[in-house]
Amino acid sequence: MIPSWPATLPQLFNRQGFAYAEGDGRLMSDTDTGPGKVRRRTTAAVDIMKGQMTITRDQLQAMRDFIRNDLIGGSLPFQIPDPLGGAAPLLVRFSKDGMPQYQNIAGAWWTAAFQVDVLP
Image (tube, rainbow, N blue to C red):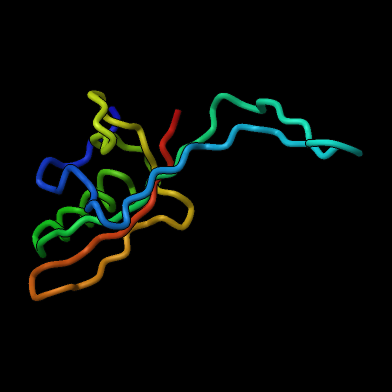
């Protein structure tokens, strides 16, 4: 069974700093003259989603437990609510350099910044 993003954590990213990039499944080739050639290489291009969430100290611990235990150190994919408004959750995994980074912003408040690959 695929792990799901815990209900005790924020279900959406903060507006500021959120980004969603379409995956690039194209193959581009230069030509001797004129514009280069472009064709589809794959239909399984991976989209990238990154942002941050504002969380409490308790939510920070819940997120760390989820990553360590449910995702086996962040190695498994998981489902997260679609921040673009889709009805179905997205299947994602942490990007190569996208594991959460936590920063204390005020007392018990933290930000968790991370990047995920949206799997096709």
